[in-house]
Length: 338
Image (cartoon, rainbow, N blue to C red; front, side, top):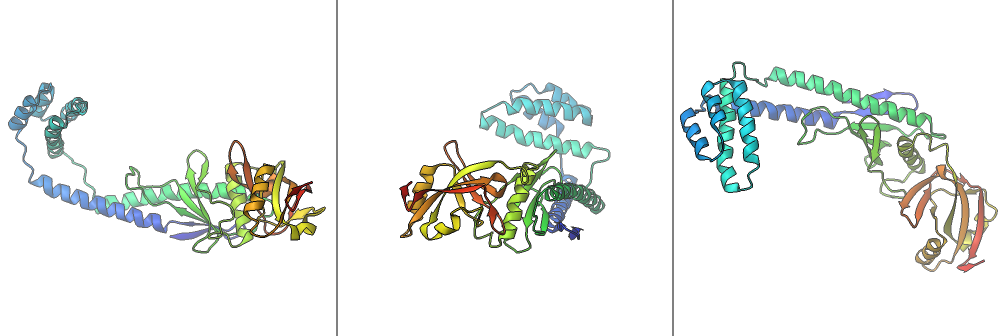
């Protein structure tokens, strides 16, 4: 299922296809489980006397449980078997516990046969579960959509890249059949960049790609929207309230005229917070090309942090066109510090 949340800017769509497929699978497996259990329990035999003897032989204090079994009172049996199970769970001797576990399982089966109205998961139950789970998932996806819409409204120069919110599939160990989380695609191509939204009391963004990954970023406008959106979701108002940073970059000597007295720089340039790192990069990236090292003062709202360590931070300038800077100062001409 795919529907368009908003046909105007920004275009945000919600896709439930993979979630729906996983929900259908869960419902079918649950139906099959209850059908098999009903068949199995129909021929189930429970010998209270034999089980009582085995419980006494186990060496555990089992009399309360035995009395409960003899009473055939479901609530009493469930209470006592839970107590007995807790006693057994504290035993590290696998030989002992492995003999008792089948007994406990048979007691739970016995309880099911005693229930006056045992729970059955029917096709009608499956339809109701599907309806309720789908409704809750839709509400969760709408919440993520609202967060994204609000974040985009705060981004200056949004390039109108389409957004698709894909509801997660149901996890194998899930106890609920609705999902709160989604992976969000920025763009419409099959390999469009994406990130994960964990929908708790607030939206948590994880699995953000690294800037400059050519496998996902071949359109500078999409790249700019991707990093502005993830940054704005993580830290509201961060895309229009930056701070001026002083950073270093190694550029080819042949580009010196481009940076002299510059007030703008091309997008996708990498920066480091340490001159020594820029100096090292100028050698590594050189490959026969002589490089200058420039000190650039730039607003952080135009940057994406790619490395964050106690001793150094690295950034990439993100934009679909030239990016404004405060100043550019040549501090090492072709490898020789000025």
